[in-house]
Image (cartoon, rainbow, N blue to C red; front, top):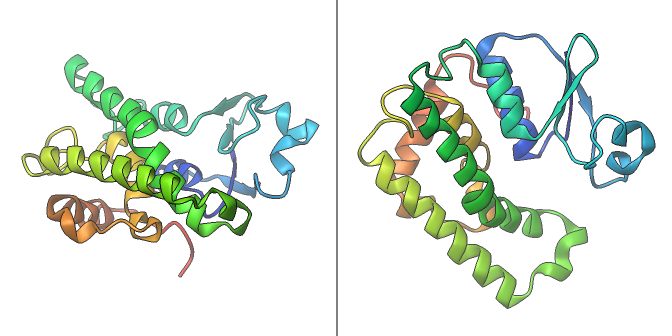
Length: 201
């Protein structure tokens, strides 16, 4: 399989991390949204939405949206429960990640990280993303104070998805010291077999 993704993108990191934990071989194809690559016709033929990551299967079919890729890869593995209710909870956290976490934690990180987004560093935008991100981290804190992982005692793709940007939240100006249960959870995810960092070194 081929994974088209951006090395320092949390969304691209999600499937790379899961495939590492599952021992699935793949070819990483560096593809950046910053240099116009994702807007070229050849990439839009893979994902008309023009975003990474995109997983190309061995038979030439494509899957895009990071959490959809996670669900595909996790099917039949320890990372996706067989119980109907537990699976619903996994989906619950995946939707939470995209609607309540990523728009604040990841966006604030990107605004601070990429020079071309400097114009977005208005006081209002920075305050709103900080407030929204802290609220999302607070929701996670309450859950993780009760269970080792987001859906109980076992690591699932819900944890993989939310780990990607949470572990780098400090680069978005978030104080993870204020969320001890989240910090302990990050260490548990990292301690799971096959863990790889987002960036080498």
